[in-house]
Length: 354
Image 1 (cartoon, rainbow, N blue to C red):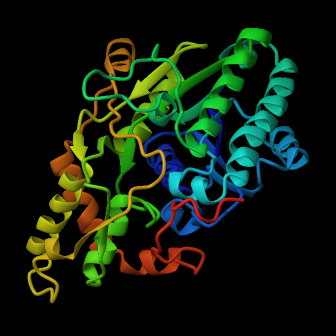
Image 2 (tube, rainbow, N blue to C red):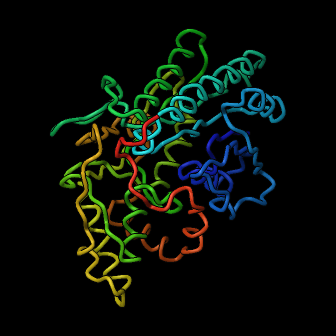
């Protein structure tokens, strides 16, 4: 199988590509614009492999997207390319509208016309896998879980843009019969994550003795999913999921932000016993909550378990320690990925929106 992965130099996309190249015989074309969060160093282990190719293309450039399809003739596409950080969407929503909505339309337009020209088994087996987020469902409340039937109530410019792209994908299936699958995942964490996200941000700040910013009271609850577990689920859905279906992917690990930060601090106390900043928990600093902050997300992943046989392998306790150890062992990657466009500054105050 030949697969186009958009956003393949990003956190989740690079995990998917590493697995495809290392664990299967599939060919992968990585289509990525290499914006601030894209980093080809995350693919250094597979970059020279004959089944891997990189295309430096922005999904907003529809002519280049069309060229990639015409040149590589894929059997499937996994669409991960997106602006993905809520705080950035508050400060600058325009990029999220352009990439997540218009960019997804461009891919659908090109992929659907490409699919129209296919015949036989190649046409029957083609899939467009759209990767989305649980944030499209909005704020869950104290009880219950998001299911595939939960109504959309996005709260941020980011989640609204992803909800819009989900609706476009479903419309292409309903209107044109275009073969799609959609996944909505909970919060990912693990190696190679860009350090604007909570876990790498707190880890790197703690190592340097910098404040560990906690929004509000730190009582926001998220379901944490280890990135390699997510990548395995994405591959399974692409290859065996039923056309037109949505699958929610969660880690069964509900934790408050405060619990996550305190866990990181405790692990660093153990793994870096000679740190000048122990106990690292003393670095916790409470900051003003971001606008429109959802309190709780939690995924019901029964459907993907029952229909496709997927279950997460990592607990939060095992996955978070693996993650911290990776950041400790890969200081050069952390240094290189921070090229000046993001230096762990506070984002999402709502004061820079255009």
